[in-house]
Length: 382
Image 1 (tube, one colour):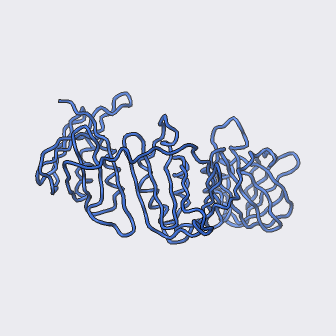
Image 2: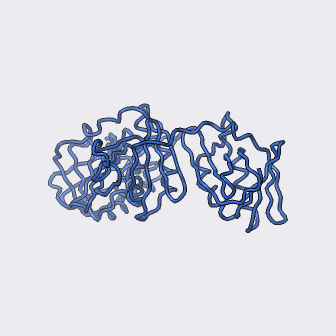
Image 3: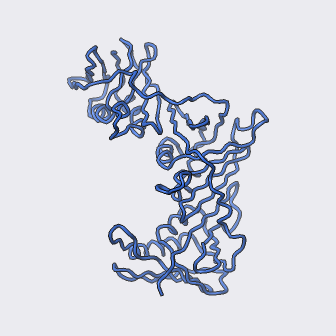
């Protein structure tokens, strides 16, 4: 194989692929990037860690065709240190890789392209598109509640549901629940007239890599769903991930049907008070958080306090709508992350008892969007 690239184009193409290059794996091939020539004017680059992967096409001058695996970490580092301009990569019959640019030259070892893991099937009749900014916002505002080491596998991912009129994203880690819905046009979801919705669960690690791909604009991203994978394609980059199998939890049963106490607070003021309390409440001993933040809701005021080995904090923020006092304790970080995800000027906090969950909703209708966040309390010491 003998291929010449523009260094800047190759560096830009490899950057996202590193998200699916496995750093430590018993299968050496998944630590590499598969480089396969395509005609005489391009090269296809692929990375795949057996759970998720990327594929992209890079313009190139192909002098000799071939398909080889090159260690991703080393290739990425070398290319970024090379001078600007044309960069040549060649592989000989002894599987020696030579990377040249200007007066700089490196040598690496390669593997045969046939050793690369078999990629999943990308073709499916189930394909639709959605504005990137919409999908990005929905993930950002729910992913904080995705479980990472939960015993129930589906909780280690976010639940996505798409219909012809909009989408829903749900995340739940056993301590928090995030539900976000958005009305928007989703092209292709119901073209056949036979199917009105699509749903799947994406793993937590996949969400982070997908966010790097998504831009906050109205350009559309194509989504293809197969039996075991979801494929996202935008601006020449194809990203794919295995889905978490199994039926998602019936999260509606966790949401109280009514509340005895409702408090309306200014979101930013509430967040600032919790940020100050967080400086004291995070008291970690042997890796465990030993403290909590106490929220005391009274008519007209919310008192926020915390005591730990780090010190003591007390703060107040105005609230309205409270008629009966209630003291309820929370993991400060859990409550903070839910409030930061709201994106509204005011929030409505609904409670029943000090040992039941707090439900956070918007105080008024948001155009084309709705949300609900639920945070479980912590049993406070007397």
